[in-house]
Length: 165
Image (cartoon, rainbow, N blue to C red; front, side, top):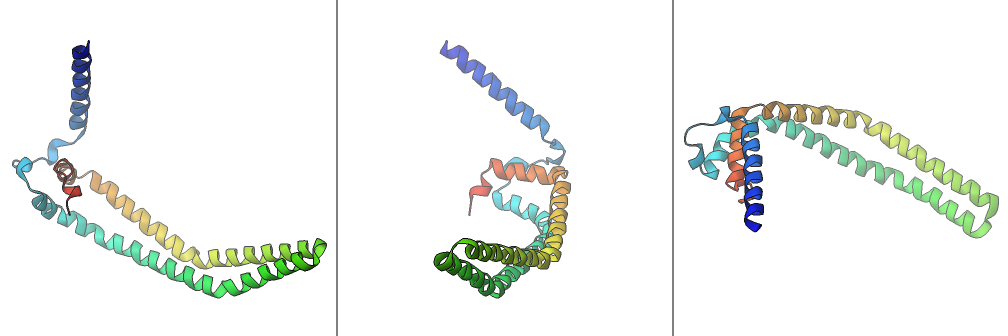
């Protein structure tokens, strides 16, 4: 019984491996691929990585601008938010009732106005980042159709190159 299970499991594994290998486009394979070292694979992948650097740098630059804008907004807006929050806390703690409700509503309105202003200020950068990210994704999808690159990635993964430092 165990042998029968082991044989079925082995047959299933072979079918799955064959299906994966068949799904991979072997047109990117070259003689000698199997003997390539991780450094040789990395060297051959350099042009592909270099072609993406511009798009990656653009996204990173926009992300840095967004972070800087966010820090500037928090520094600018924190005092106004804190003031209305403290006023609401004082009204609720000392007076209560309608004064508390009015102060809390004013605090919420102030927070919402600040949030909307910050969002509007960030919109051009957010739109730019989205366009840059879409371009990077499109480039990556185009690269997936490159049989040689996919073969190199497959070799690198099979050799454990992604786990080396």
